[in-house]
Length: 245
Image (cartoon, rainbow, N blue to C red):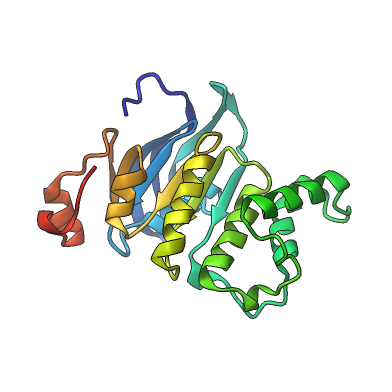
């Protein structure tokens, strides 16, 4: 899909970032558009997680800056949802399905204020959207991988963000729910930009409108076509093992 007629939601300009003086990303330029579906691929240690942290405002770049836009106008920040990797979740933490999704609205109230009726209505609507009716009181430790992914996706979506970032969303879920997950993401994409980080190359190629390849630096492919040479050199994938869209 050509980007010439699209409206930017977020622009990363000349971003360099890392940890304890070590540079992980160098001179990264990237635009996320309104209702974008951006796939991010790259090898382990190549900087995908660092890029996510910068986009979410969890890591301050060593160089460069980020611009956020709404309807083409520069704004100070942006509402974003985040679905972390499954193995970063403590399933033993004593919290219910309902309260997990409700926690996605913490930024919508002051620290010591109670959640308002409208917040609870948003949670109830999100629970229905995720197909989790009847499971509101379940502890997250009681859930299957697919059910927990739906809960975490609900938490990321409940505040109606303009951009949602998903980090390896199909980890630990079966193929049956994976198809349902991507169908749900297609519906979400009608109103929200999606940034999908995944090792599942075929899923990225099949669903993403644009693709960013990250390995220390970033190359952007607005047509979703990634050169076979890059896949071979950076991911060790030969052309016969993937199907580009």
